[in-house]
Image 1 (cartoon, one colour):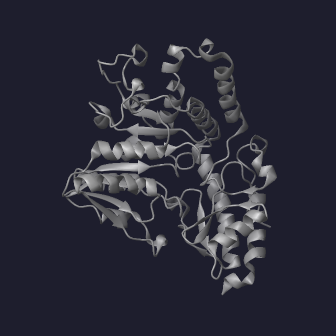
Image 2 (tube, rainbow, N blue to C red):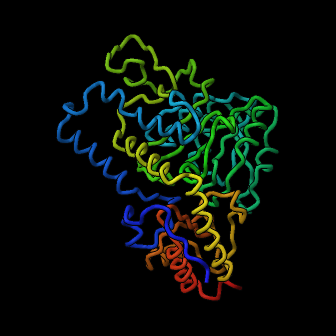
Image 3 (tube, rainbow, N blue to C red):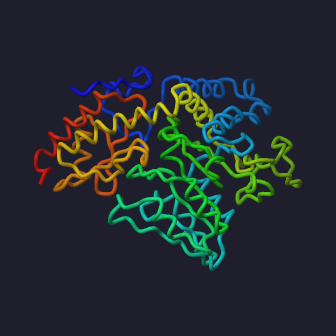
Length: 391
């Protein structure tokens, strides 16, 4: 008998794992009950008391705790962190800030999440720069660091990639890619939405220029918040694309003439946004810190190994890297003769929640899952696909 793997976090903190077999963190992560309580308490305070409990000074400082938590998460100083409404918003701002000119190129990948590539295509419409893609759509398993690096040349201005790929979980060696980018004077812009909360991150060690991470996946936050790291060289003297009343050093002076911008990455925080979401992000990071990001990754990989072994026995094709050191917590598998949409719907109907991606099924366990979730998923998958998958 394969030894049982207990959950890393108390399952009682996540109601959904008692309701269903939830292996869909890479789509929407589950929020722990203590994190949810912090968010609800803030909403109740604002709704019931207005500025009695949330005056100008409190609003000015509302994200300080979250910014500090995000800085610990990525290995930076709080001054280098901003809290924005989404990773997409932050990536869009960064693309226009860097704005590569005609003759320059931006290196990315053709299986990226669209928010990673679309901003650069839009900039290219204005400046004429080239968006140069690593082509692996026909064979996603072929993606590796070397394929990315070989597309970088003396005209590369930006390398824009995900730390962990949303579909396959492939996780890039950021230091290797940063070194290759910086050797030609390019910037490395990283979407860490699929790695933050499951893969340890250190932007200083890896010499990353920009890193953004949405809150609502592996971090266990919710929609409406993202953490953004800017290398000090980028935020010093930064002239943001979007400006608003919060862009200044003293927001509540409401000076319509003197545009003295804030010091630090928080200059990207230009507007009133979903404060409860940002507060929940800080609380969610704290929750994961208490568990340990290293332990969360080891836990997910242990569950993944059990999953991969079972999928191999069923006859599935594993698209994600088999080497645990090259992926986050996701496993993408394809089943010959089975439509991915129909299969995902059949699994959901049986109470197993996963996602269809790149012609396959993506499983993504996290801290609330245990081996019973994996065994249940394998049982249902085998029942749905049958032995036909072996051929």
